[in-house]
Image (cartoon, rainbow, N blue to C red; front, side, top):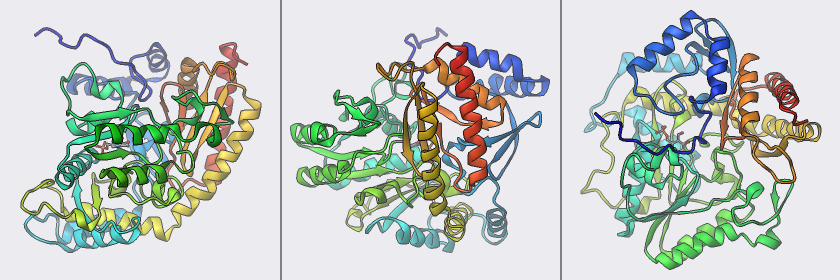
Length: 467
Ligand SMILES: Cc1ncc(COP(=O)(O)O)c(C=O)c1O
């Protein structure tokens, strides 16, 4: 069969697996066992950017650590945002095991206690009055349910979402997503009516407004990014929903007042507001939900990733009670939607987050970290911007602060140097080191990670003549 994909997408969502630097790192670092493991993976799995062929092979994950097949340990500041409570939390493993003994599965037509207990807990901790829900096994599926619900509730089908966003791999989620890797060229027509606008991104304002140390000058920009959402809502006139991450995982934090303005615009134009909190939910940003910082309540909130405690796949769509309007249809109906073992994992994960005060740790240790990074920015002139909240942190590297040319090769080199020194994270948008540590990370671990990063930035920028 002819190979049909002819146009290569921009490789900026994460650190990609096709660069020379990756090749060089693999050659220098992988021993026979790793090579055998990743070759087996590459033989069997469809190749895709940012996964197969893989970086290396892991055999153990515990607390903040992952360990590769050759016994090298990495502080995992990536973890796909599933590892809020650390890997393999003993209390979670016990709860899962007990649940497997009591009730390992529940066919959908039966109610079961773990599912209703988790649902009640989510009502308790989620913002405002989000009190009806469905569970799915992955975030992308939860996004699909949210889109269906918005269509059914409004009688409209259009959406507004952000360029550069990721919302999952399904057709609906890929349609509202804004990254080439996941939506363009190869897979053909996506959902019609998926309108996109430029996102808030104060350091690189798409509307060209200047920033001051990464902060917007609201008097000058007058929240043009929010006004554009209002503009499209008005012009289209029949938009079902605005869907976005309240804090972008790239990361970017919204300018003050952004979400209040969008909430008002949605209300005025009859559109729902859907927050995708799949990576940020359950405390990543130092509040239980990222939208808590903005005090804006969505009509629908989607969460996942850490909900399964880093062991089981689980996601949820939470909605306002008045959206319970489609009882004659079935918008979810996933085989494992009320799986008691997954539900027990979700409930126990939230209990661990509460009992160990992990949201507070993300808030305080996160703030401490961002303060330290701002000091590092004074010393390392390739750091253009430090941004984030809690344990969602970005370090954007530039060739010069004046023209902000992205230092993509430098960022990649820093990543591999950090891996050499036992720290794993991912790069986003090509030149942003993105740190998403587990919420259990303490100051000592953070301090050691920061030292590793600064050493790598200094060595890389020296080697590339950027100091
Ligand atoms: C913001 C956001 N939405 C949705 C998803 C999709 O979740 P899943 O991979 O569980 O389908 C992701 C995953 O990375 C995400 O970061």
